[in-house]
Image (cartoon, rainbow, N blue to C red; front, side, top):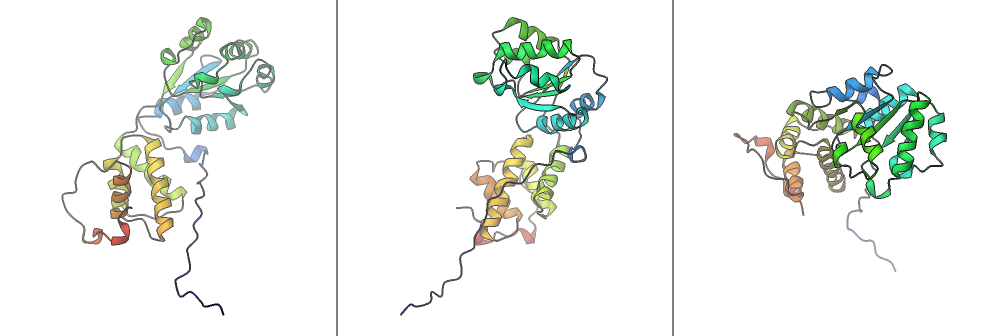
Length: 252
């Protein structure tokens, strides 16, 4: 005869990634990315057929490229997937985004150079994205290196404090999470100024809170930061009585 287990039912959690929102209204503009945003907004009055957008991983390059692609009805292709056979097809669309030209191990420099020349010949605007500057791309094709050096562009800089806080709030909102401002402040004081890092930490907090079936609190945020090796930062001058550590907030 079977006996019933009196243990509480297990909670199933599903680690579903939050879809990034790449609409124009979702892009937060600050001093760090104002020049890059202005370049995208200036189209079609670009000074050249080709423009280059640079910035560290997670800084918003793909978001800006998506905004421009929507406006220009551009096709988007990773640089690593472009070969000679794809060039005429891509240019035939009339506008192209080429992402991650810094992925050098799989990059066909001859095909990329051919694309830029054909795009200029046919007045097809091209937006290129890269995590590093042209001179550090390690290009072996001198003509391509020269062409990219001459291309006008804009750089996304590390975010200032206000932009970092605003992005953290937006990342929580995008995941339909409601948190106290103390959580946002704790994260902003302790992570490096990187939107990519902010995205990583918010995703980890969401995963952790979902697995525990608990809301995101400041103690939980600090525990997760410590687990990620990001616990250093400015200490609080005062302790909020609501911030007492719950035993369940201790990260394993």
